[in-house]
Each structure stands twice: as structure tokens, then as C-alpha cells.
Image (tube, rainbow, N blue to C red; front, side, top):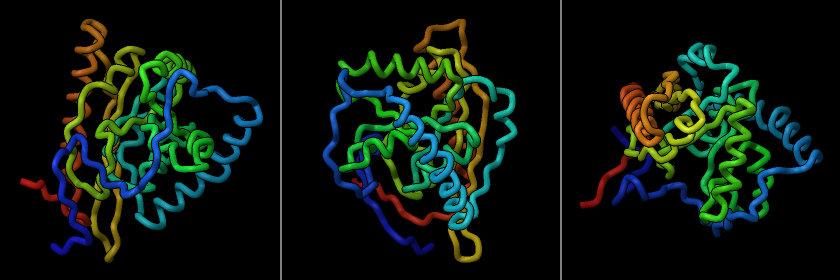
Length: 254
């Protein structure tokens, strides 16, 4: 099979292939998660009137996107849900959450890098980016805001692999760290696995939703987080085998 690009990597947990250079902002106790009415109104218009139609059209027209298993979301429609997916597409990974949880607004936990491009911080937040602190002093405000979103039944999306590997067709290892959130708030978790196929000389995307997976309340939060992580990882690994097209080749350096 001929690949469009080849990447060489050293570490599946740390290597990044977004190709975007930026100076990372500081997200600490001074970072503002709450905004005024004018900001919130502008964010609603930008997300629901502009971005959401663009997301659907882009994913449908360019990739003939198909979402399998959306009916599984019905039983948890009125609850806060945590979604975990593989991080493999720019800009698709920003659009896919909106397509999955429509008509609700998706909240996407984001590394500070994702709101660090000059002049785009407010824009990215309006579109759902929820920056994770890179300073310990910011954790209290972050957890307070996360708790508020959980109480408001927001759909919260997380890419536990953390670093983007474009068009990668396997599931990279990830820790249980972010699974502490659904375990802590007693929220269900779902996996969404992006897979790639080739059809009529075009790349096609099929997304598989699995779950819900519920945290075990009879064990510690850490144990419940590890259990959720294992369930999600197994589901994603199984679904990743549905990829039949490898657009980009990844080779581990010796």
C-alpha cells in the first residue's frame, strides 16, 4: 500500500505530529473560565449558527462521515456524559464532538496549546475548548468549573492519548488520569472511535460509539477510574480494527 506520508516516532505517549508551532499560554489560578452575558451570547451564536453547520458539512462532504451507535446515547441523554476518543484528525477532532452530541454544545478538554495561537483564545473557548491547567494553582478553579459543567449535564469530550497523530489507525496507550472525572462525579462514560476507510479514491470516516460504561461506586475513585479506562481502551482497540485504509505510516525508531 502506498502511503501519503511517513512519520517516525520515539514515544507513543509523548510524540506530537500536529505540525503547529505556538507559544503555550499559562493556565493558572488567574485564568478566567466564567464570562459575561455578551460573551456567552456571542459564543452561542458562533457555535450553534456558524460552527455547527460547518462541522456537519465538512465531515459529511469531505469524509462521508458515518456515526454508528448514536442510539446508545439515549439512556443517558439527561445526564452529564464523558466521551473518550482517539486523537487522529485536524480539524476533525474539533468537529466530531459537535456532530455526536447535537443539539447540545460539546465541551472539549484541551491542552493549553489549543488556545495558544495568537488571537484565538476567546474563539477556541467559544467553540467549546476547556483548557486544563498547566500550573497547580489553576486546579481549584478548573475543578470548580468542571463540577459546574457536570451539574449542568454538559457532554464532556476528552482525547486521552493527548497528542495528535493524524490518520493513525491504532489506539495508543493512555493512562487512567482523565477517567477520574466520571468516577468522581458518578457520570457514565462512552468511547467514540474514529476509523478510516477508502471509497471511490476518497478517505471515509466511520465513528463507532460504545457504552455507556458506569463507574463502580463500591471501590475507590482511583480503582473506578482504572476500571473505566480499561473498558474504554478495550472498546476503542476493538473498533480500531474497522480501519481498512492507512493513509499515513508510523514507524518506531530503534
